[in-house]
Every structure is written in structure tokens, then in C-alpha cells.
Length: 137
Image (cartoon, rainbow, N blue to C red; front, side):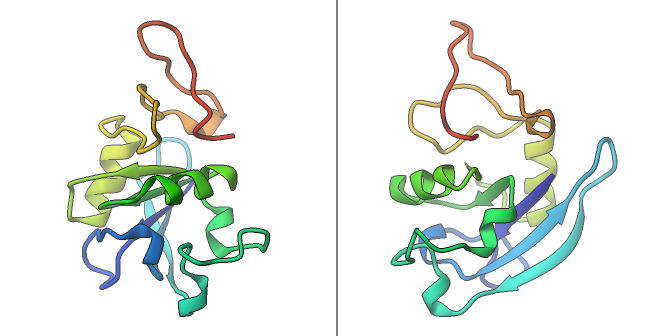
């Protein structure tokens, strides 16, 4: 699983995801701890806010994007690309990724009221009413 974290300074989780251009990319396989595999530093025209959404984007290869804050439009645009957006108050990128993998974060998608801690297999947990969401493919 590939997880991108918004980090304008490559040290802390930052918000304003729609305008973010810098991301730390982590990868995790099975029970292995997540490891940093890349850092994205995108041109200004590649920020999701104002981006041509019919074109390919480097975030398309991510399964999850963790951020300090994102608007509804950003969440919808990434969901359409198959990327789950998760908001966090955690400032340390690796701790944020670990918290997500442990199931301690929720989707930032409107109406999504269950966790997504087991995205690897394509399945996800359901809420107490057995409802599902469309916040990822």
C-alpha cells in the first residue's frame, strides 16, 4: 500500500491539501512497518486545486493520502482517482501513517462513518448499521 502525507517542509504533516505540492510517500507491505520511499515536490500547476482533473497525476498511484486538512472538493477529486483522504491532528508523518494503519483514523469523506484500516485487500470495515461508502474504489 502506498500512502502519501502532505508535508510542505518534509518534517511535519501540513494542511491545505488542495494547494499542497510536497508529499512524503510511504509504502507498507503486510505486517512490515511503513518505510519512506519517495518525496514529491510538484510544480505549482500540479496542486490539485486548479489542476486539470482529466489528466494523470502523481497522486494517482497512492492508495491513501493523509493530511492535516482538506476541503470537500479535494476529498471528492481524490476519491474519483481511487485515493482515500484521511485527516489527522498528528504532526509527525510516520506516526500519522502508523495511526492510520492501526485503524485510529477516519476518512475525511462526507458521510463515511467507518474506518478503512484494511484497505490492502480492497475490503473495509462497516459501521454498526452495515452501511458502506463510496469514498474509495
